[in-house]
Image (cartoon, rainbow, N blue to C red):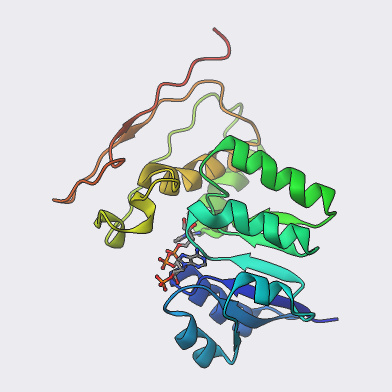
Length: 221
Ligand SMILES: NC(=O)c1ccc[n+]([C@@H]2O[C@H](COP(=O)([O-])OP(=O)(O)OC[C@H]3O[C@@H](n4cnc5c(N)ncnc54)[C@H](OP(=O)(O)O)[C@@H]3O)[C@@H](O)[C@H]2O)c1
């Protein structure tokens, strides 16, 4: 059986998926794309059907999985729509910007008995995998503190009109912090008890949300 994938959004990540699935994945293929001004070009470049809307994509009988490469603020509603039609969902991180939205996405996909998966791309980086191997082998010993340093060339994200700076997207901090949080929890195999973070922007333009203080109460008191 070949799993049919419908891509939502046609930007950086959607194009990365279209290429990666075509070149590397056996047993699955991208069949259609919808969403965004770049969708016609993505469809043409990868031989996909260009659908005018998510509803039109969900009406297809060759789409088993909906792959969300769309802006974070629409992951919630698009996941609910996909679940309503019995489609599995693979979404980009962050899954959504608020816990109520995330809970609703988990509930909807569970009730529909479909899978919901969030991309965890950073787990495939070589240095990260080496660190996890050291943790898993016991070479490091008991983990009491993790320091994760992360730098991101926020070229498009520095534009105040970029989707990541719009209401509902969370913030650029959420957008990139999702990687850090995932890596810490995955490499150590535990949730944080206490967290402290510093976050800085080194570009000339500083839209809202590009600086943050993260006070997290200690669960040990
Ligand atoms: N895992 C990673 O390393 C990684 C890296 C980058 C981004 N991401 C995540 O991936 C998602 C997309 O980011 P990106 O960098 O690919 O952004 P992007 O390049 O701006 O692509 C977003 C695409 O979605 C389209 N779009 C806008 N509103 C839409 C809607 N309501 N429904 C469907 N499509 C819509 C855009 O249309 P236009 O073509 O008209 O702009 C664009 O084609 C975000 O959640 C982001 O956090 C993850």
